[in-house]
Image 1: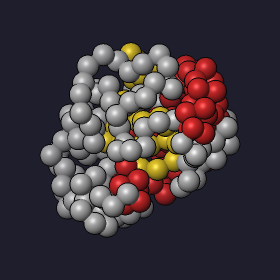
Image 2: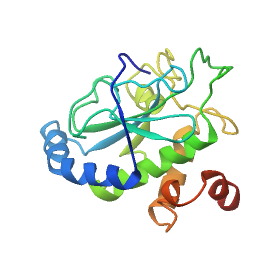
Image 3: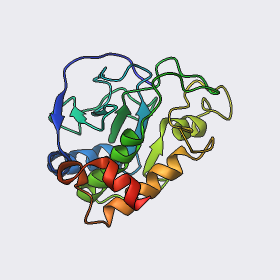
Length: 203
């Protein structure tokens, strides 16, 4: 979920790759200072489509547009409880009034899921990260690890599931798609072709 809002700038996947390359050393130093690797955390904002929050380095709107809230991906932001140092936070702009049995009127869109996987692939490429559970997690997964997720208090359950995906499988689906994009010539389809074309021909 999220806290505060406001200033963001639309960016491309290629621009994100460059931002990640520029921040790589700083992110690695931050992560090493607390004895772990650089991490990527995936969230939903629990706000409206088109509503952006600077708690996340990257916001993804309903139509798949990508927005950055900073010029330095190593800036420490407040996206994941006790896990913000040496980490990049991605927020999908959606899930207003969502509850565990109903994602509401503004659920994660197919484009948001697809683009979140593309963003993870772009970041992983530049940061030399393996796309697996140890390096890329949803907030639901991180919260479960830390005792406040779906398995316990369910304070945070971002991307625990979404349309067509069973509870508990959201992270696995996004990581699977991200690995596909990492090794695909279609990684830049956001700039090169309509997302619908890729989604319905590749999945």
